Length: 492
Image (cartoon, rainbow, N blue to C red; front, side):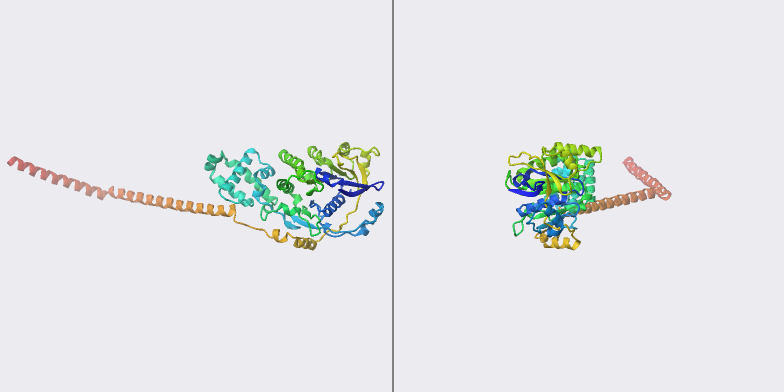
């Protein structure tokens, strides 16, 4: 099956094979060159084929897929491309938002994230990751649910207060290591992690839904606010890919992918990522294609995508790139060298002189080999260009089939609540012990005072005189008795 989404200068169709979409892709170009239109047109075709899509909407200009477009506004493009059968259309959309402002709240529990992935996002070292694994192990062994960051902090406090016992069971755990993890969790909270890590957790299967007309649901992740916290943004998107990989069966190169994922502002995934995080991204890109998932990175600069990842991208759609500096000239040269040249034109010159909506396109053929590049004009989208207002967002959210499932949060009894009771009981017992110690100390003090008073009484002048007189009198009586007894013996 082909997705026809552009026409070359000879008005011949330019297409992508649906069975090659899981070989991933790149959409790049300068601001205003037409990347968003390309993304929307591909998304519309995928939805029509029953293929669900996930879009990260950084600029807030994708939610209008829910409304049909105005053919009059794209008439010039239709005339240029000699398109006679254009029909405006709306598409099934679900809106999602970590902050819950412009979509259904996106939530994930700590236990769903897991220690390894969470440790990668927090950029923990080997020792810190080991302690995080211990925290999860202890929570499991004691039946303590890890749902949000409060739960995780409570488990770390439990380990801190019982380090000696924990170290005997699991190996040495230092207070400094626990404190380092706690500081990184605090940073995550400041980025909005306390909203993200909660319930009800997102069910990945809900991203694979279709509407009653068997069109794939377009899942739009509102990232206008989230983008200010790149780590949280990348964390969620990577977790989602990881979950998809874990949950979906191996399907290979099927005619239709299970899902296509578009990462807008893709440079944010890699800009500040650690080496371990970049390796995780590369691993997911390599492996998830076998699950029938296609990933498209959307960026202004194609060099924002690291070479190991870029080499995995089969489809490349390059809009106009501008060269005003030596670095930009090198960028155009490098991207040109990565594409299969077309003998009909100079690729470097063409890339710099593309009109808005035009692109250089290459994608794998039936055998998997890259096709020679073609210069083509992208079809106009059938959905609207008009931005949505707040009431539009609210309407889409309330009309969602998942509204009742996700809109209202849950706060089940978990590690935080159970350990809070335990900590309070321990604190109460500590207070009782302190009171008992205080009473014992007071009692000892009272006894000591009584003894001191007795000693002082025994050492008073009158007591000494009395004791001395009594002693003398006792001795005198003793002598008299002794003489009396001796005298009796003599008479006999």
